[in-house]
Amino acid sequence: MSKTLTVTALLTGVVTLGQGVFAEVVDQRIQVCGGCHALGAPAGGQGHGVDGQVQVEKQTIPPIGGDPEHLYQLMIAMKTGQRAVTVMDRILRGYTDAELKEMAQLLGALGNSGDPGDLGNRGSQRSQVK
Amino acid sequence: MLSRRRTLKGASLGLVGLLSGCLSGGGVTKARVVVAGGGFAGATCARTLAQLGIRVTLVEPNPVYTACPFSNLVISTDRPIQAQQFSYAGIANAGVEVRHARVVGVDAQRVQLDDGSRLDYDRLVLAPGIEINWDGLPGYDQAAAELMPHAWQAGAQTLLLRRQLRAMPDGGVVVISVPDNPYRCPPGPYERASLIAHYLKAHKPRSKVLILDAKDRFSKQPLFTRAWQEQYGQLVEWQGRSAGAAVVEVDAQSGAVLTDFETVRGDVINVIPPQRAGFIAQTAGAADNSGWCPIQAGTFESTRLDRVHVLGDAAIANAMPKSAFSANAQAKLCAVQVARLLADQPPQPAKLINTCYSLIAPEYGISVAGVYTAEKNTWRSIPGAGGISPMLQAPAGAPRLEAEYARAWYATITREVFGG
Ligand SMILES: Cc1cc2nc3c(=O)[nH]c(=O)nc-3n(C[C@H](O)[C@H](O)[C@H](O)COP(=O)(O)OP(=O)(O)OC[C@H]3O[C@@H](n4cnc5c(N)ncnc54)[C@H](O)[C@@H]3O)c2cc1C
Image (cartoon, rainbow over all chains, first blue to last red; front, side, top):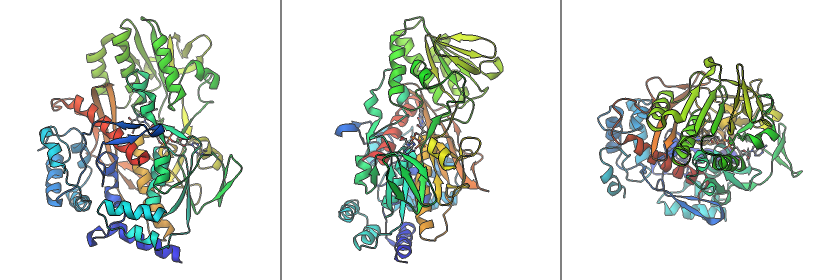
């Protein structure tokens, strides 16, 4: 009984980002973004090798987050090809605009401010990542 | 102990930790999930389950995981094997109980480990990756693999292939035998051919890579074909099934592979053999006659075993390729579904993504992407989305950028899965 209650509370937390409650697991609709863009932590960064050896790799894929409206506009620009990208156009075409709006809200709530990478503005990428 | 860590970590991220609250309040769920296999699928799933506050035990025999993505760069002498290796310390720190043992038996309540102990489970996640199907290619057995490495499970095999490549005289022939679908990492053999050609071009330019394929079409084919021509000319030759190139038998002692038409000799022979879901999936009965494990798409629950989920390479995820990216994406979603099912809540739908980079050379990358939805119990590719890097009108600098993104992807995913 208590097991069910606890997990239920927890799962409610997972999906009610809008109420200012954040469990450490992100909503399943945006989990997959974390395959390339670290969510809630800097991307690229470091991997921990064996024997405490730390591998440092160049960071080129920024974290995503920031103002949901800005994020949404950015995604639409990439989806429609207005903004030159390598792969995000192909991925974003798999989502409806309504889904992207929702995802932008969820991503924005993660607290990063970041700008998904593109070919045009690479120089400014870093400075946009706080 | 654990709750303290989590509370602090949550606080340091500026997050209000409802989850941490639950844990420190002592109301941790009693349910236990056992995850068999600590690769991209299992390790991700165990970690996400721990984040969800679920008691989870990860069973993995190896103290060190050796990742396959980027291991082709190890073969081409461009990368140390250590860059592929990860300990399980970060996963243990994340609140997962890690047991270094092998799961050797599964029943409806518990798993049997090779150290003699048993673990009870409420839900079990099987993520054993692949095993080589030693019955799949006549002449190719464990002894043959010491002469003709597959290097399709990274580690000693990867280093063996690299040694052979280094020892090969200039003017030698490297034969790569590629199996029919499905197998782990569809574009992997062609990335390997590219990077071996990259090595040969610099060190043994009179040599050659000959790909003998059991298929007529392969992943990212137009991109590979064009890049081979541009970068390597005569150095890479591909022959497909309809040219009679499928390898049907190997003779490891004499260093030859046999197709239906001829005997092909090589100075280095890399046999990528037929594969199937890891042995425990077979023993447990999760695999069907195909050798792979059918699942209910939305939850990854086995269609054959109750309360058992199958992830990653071992699972039949339909349009989703067997990749580390897919394994990681599936695992995160599966963890949420397992948590929901334990709480008697309905599973949540979600789309998944795959992006696989391949390197033609260390600074030349290409990619294939897909977006997937679980419809009618099948992972389907969403039409109009995904596909390969553009052949025409590719933005200038895209190949170099894709190589950079490939490296950044590897750094991010390995950090997400094994870091901390
Ligand atoms: C050369 C090469 C290049 C690749 N490049 C890429 C790439 O660029 N991008 C990409 O996305 N993918 C790539 N892949 C594919 C990727 O490596 C696999 O898809 C991925 O490893 C699958 O993850 P998994 O967790 O299912 O299996 P694995 O990573 O194989 O993990 C399975 C784990 O289960 C353990 N295990 C097995 N049996 C048991 C048992 N009975 N009990 C307990 N534990 C057990 C094993 O020890 C292992 O650690 C590549 C593969 C190869 C071979």
